[in-house]
Image 1 (cartoon, rainbow, N blue to C red):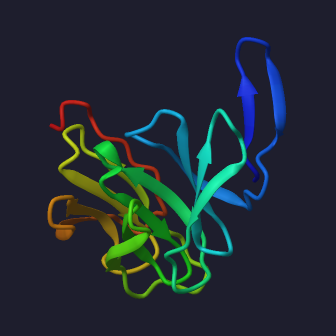
Image 2: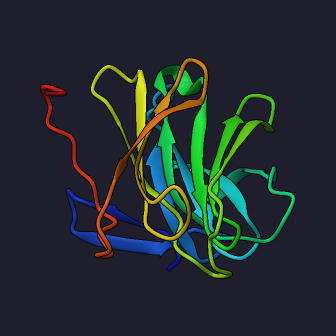
Length: 171
């Protein structure tokens, strides 16, 4: 899927954003409302797109291997980006200002071409939850966003559930 811009006021679709390739994970910047981060399938990169100017502004090319970026979560001020990836399984913690990987949180036993985790932040942004359905540990992994350390795993049964939603009260 390539990204396209839709104008709500006129109901018109604009041309596809140039150079976006097989966009899977998409997240809005939390520092600049004009920017979108889009994970690209295949090359294992994150495009940074200006919503007002449409063409891709830059490319975060941090991935050491070719992989699909399935989900992207952004901390306030764009301090960190969490990008889940398939094939080898895990989450990259990225510093977008420096275009560098701060940490890799691996999940073992992921089959080649396996599912990357779906992710969501807690309402206070202190915890990241990732649904790991293809790999070990299998379940909802709770990660501290201050240290980027796995705190615990809430086991899932053998069904293949990947979408997770948090209660807004964090209860």
